[in-house]
Image (cartoon, rainbow, N blue to C red):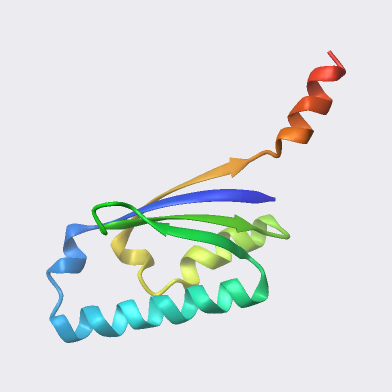
Length: 98
C-alpha cells in the first residue's frame, strides 16, 4: 500500500525554545532514517518554504499507516494529509476490464 503524506509544520512548533526545536528535529530525522532503512519510507522532500514535507510510504498494512504518524516525534506539531496512491498499472488493468 503506497501513501503520500503532505505535512505542514504548525506555528506552535516555532513557539518552542530553540533547544527543544533542535532536539525534536534531530529525533524526527533519526525516525525518518529508521523508516528509510526498514523500507517503509521511499522518498521525502521538503516543501519549498521549508515548513513542511511530502513523503511517499510503501506500507505492509493499515496498522503501519496508523503507527508511523503516532510514533513520529513531531506528529503533535504537524497538520498532515494522508492520501492513498494507486500504481498506474493497476488503474490500466481496471480500465481494460470496463
